[in-house]
Image 1: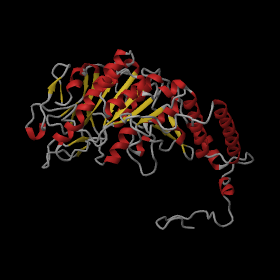
Image 2 (image 1 turned 60 degrees about the horizontal axis):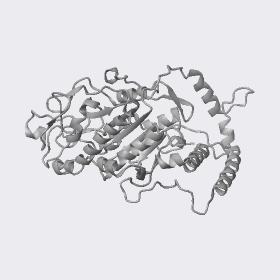
Image 3 (image 1 turned 30 degrees about the horizontal axis):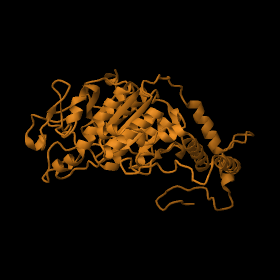
Length: 444
């Protein structure tokens, strides 16, 4: 039977009296009663290699993602001595690292550069937003055959939750499917806020019980749901059911724990500190991220802004870079003041950079051949610049870094050996990161 008009092979006709159960028993090992999926899982388990265990340097990670592709010239890698059509509309400014510059709109970041590592030689070959985003959230190039899991989902799978809090939170919502679970169970997906921390009256959806439900009634509902879940588990073992059970357990833990609920409550912060972060989208999202890792969330993925500046980059950058500058600098000093920076890895990335030369509409176009990523805390060096782009900011000049290198280094700092394999559907073991190297040069 042809299953698809473009397919050249013949397949078992499942409509001709062969049930799904019969089909799954094809390939049964003699007398053992193993289904095909069970057999494949056993075979895969036999070839799963043991990997070295790593002691974590960082307990948590805040990943600040700047969708659209932030221009390296206007931010982390300015070219103060290039001609105006390459340098761009701003005047680079000196930083707390002698001889190093950042973009004009990074006045606060310039003061705390001595706490950061900046990688100026990131590179990959994907100039489309979707493909570049996939690279920078997974450490893998996109594949038509398989969807790879995001950093947060791998961390959730490997390390689980703490203090009744979700291990992986996105603020405020997922901006791309690449922030999701890929081939892994949906149980390892992110918890999304559902609203913006900068909004007046901000609350997180689903964290409060209905007003007419007291504690005893809440517990009865929980017990009843557990009974129903057990029944359906016995009938059908499916990812959707096990994932939903995990979601329910996590949700009940979150709702029933006052400490966990309060982690999302920005009103617990002083007005002064909220003002210092900035009463805007960047400021309140970054402040909430700090509260969440402080309470026990393992990874907070924060999305901010839109950096796809094909035209009028001067006005576009001026419109959102100052808020980012204020909030990011305050986040780093806040973490340091609380003694949290050494155990919290902070990473700022985008899907790619922008063209080295300003275009005819005074903007910059997509450019994956070289761009920048900033790191802080969590075991990375302070005041360190890794790699370099060439004189015009168009190619890596030395020490090129790929997404797989960045991913492998991040996992190492969190205590995850990226050479470990995770089982995909069909009993297929897949490396957490395939290839790349740990960037020992950036580790303190």
